[in-house]
Image (tube, rainbow, N blue to C red; front, side, top):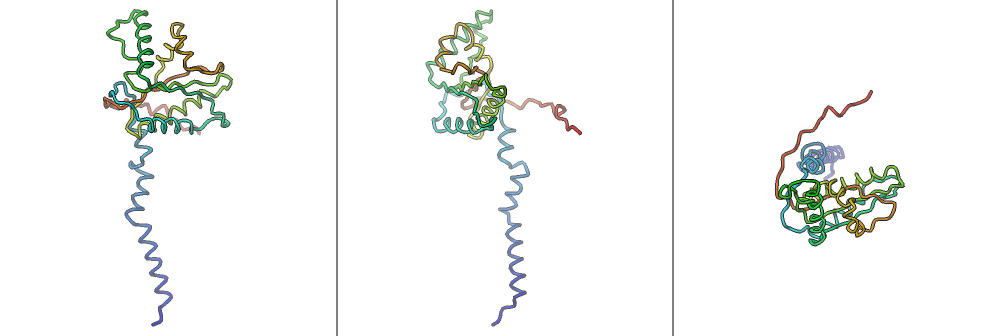
Length: 214
C-alpha cells in the first residue's frame, strides 16, 4: 500500500506542534518568565539572618558556597580579593569576646551586646586589593554570589561591618595577623553563615530609586 507523502508531512507537523505545546515545555517557559524562576525566587527569599541554630554548616556545602563566590564577575580577571574562613568555635569565641570587651569599653551595657556574628558557626572575611581602584566592586560581587548560593541551600547569612571595625582596632592586632592578609589588602567586610533560627519579614524597598534615563 503506497503512503501519501502529503499525509506524512501533515502528520509530522502535527507531531512537532504537540511537542512544542507539551506540559513539560510549557512548564519550562513559565519557569523562565514567571514566578517559578528559581534564581528570582532565591533572590527574593533572601533575608539578613541574626539568629542561628547551633548546627554546623557541612564542609561540602561551605566549599560550594566559596567556589561560587570566586566564580563571580571580576575586573580583568584579577580576582582582586582575599578570603579567610573562620569556623572553629575557639576562634569565633575569641573574636566575640573581644567584640564584647570593646563595646563595654565604649560604655555599652554588657547584657545588651549581641554576639559579633549573631552566633553563626561560620565567618567569612573578605579583603580587597588596595592597589586596584575597583577591587571593592569585585569583592561585593563575590559576596553576593556566596550569599545567594547559601540561600539556595537553606543556609542563612548576614553581611557584617562592625566585626571588621573590631578586628581593625589596636586591641585586635593579634587576631588580624592570624588572617595573614597580604600587605596591600584591606579587610573590607565579613559574612556570617549558618542555618537560620528565625524567619524575618522582608523590609520594604524604594522602587523610586530606579530611574530610566532618556
